[in-house]
Image (cartoon, rainbow over all chains, first blue to last red; front, side, top):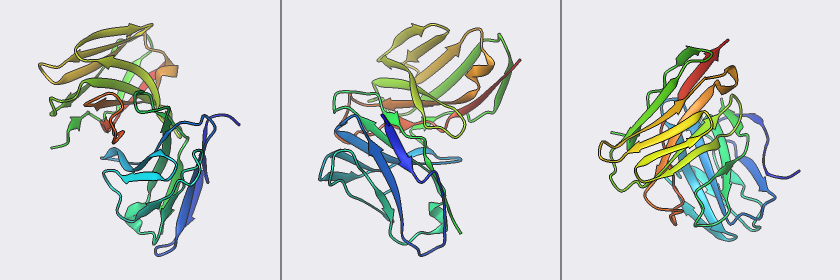
Length: 113
Length: 114
């Protein structure tokens, strides 16, 4: 499948558990991003990556870990999930630094009970 | 104060109406302005993109930027039920900054009823 895909689509977990959200893109885009979307806050950047093995914090990185060993994959891990991390998570990619357009996945709806 | 303010609505209009969606911002460094459309249970997709002040038209959609007032608008003419979605404004101080960060508004939920 071409494009940017996220998995799982829905996830329910309990507080304290580790959860990994997957993101895969087939375009060989350099930049990849993780956002969370919450009512009242809109989209907030968690982490981004400019290339394989290069990652950096965004606006709300606490409680999250990312890795990017391959260009096409950018998993997001919640090391010890908390209720405040209940949200819809979007992965996005962009071709390179000089491009404005972000391509978003369909999102993962995460509920932490 | 958030850097980008957007009324979340909801906004409900009849088919054929002209819709006006707006955002204000506080950071005068913003130069690139975008509108994303997000259908229910989908990711946002880029709808319009403008640089600096002025207007840009694409079919039924017109994006307007007034940097002096720190105000951007999206107009939808002859609105259709298929336009029902959440519209998010986004902006950036430079083109593809290293941080890659877009500053998003909260989104306005629009419903166009037949």
